[in-house]
Length: 105
Image 1 (cartoon, rainbow, N blue to C red):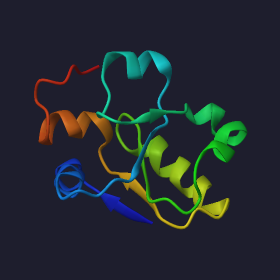
Image 2: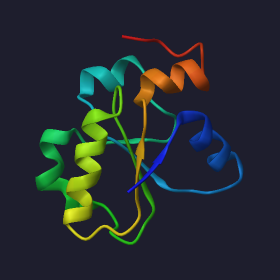
Image 3: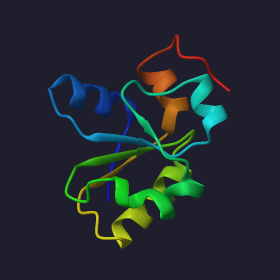
Image 4: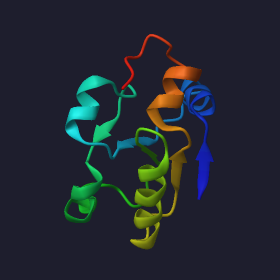
């Protein structure tokens, strides 16, 4: 599985790439901050909702620090998703590397 640091993802998006940005955090977390354009499907709901995602689409999985997203990305790979990327460091690192004004928790 590929991994992006937040600065790498921001540059990738700026180049015009349009992966699905899948946020697997809890709703209360996403209510505090989120990567713009991300879709929220909490990790606990992923088994029941994975069918909502396109297995062929490039998918970047996002969480708070990159641990839950890593496990969720591995899960998606086990379901046959072919192009899954983990956001290493998660939204916490996004705030450090890309958007210092982003609220933190």
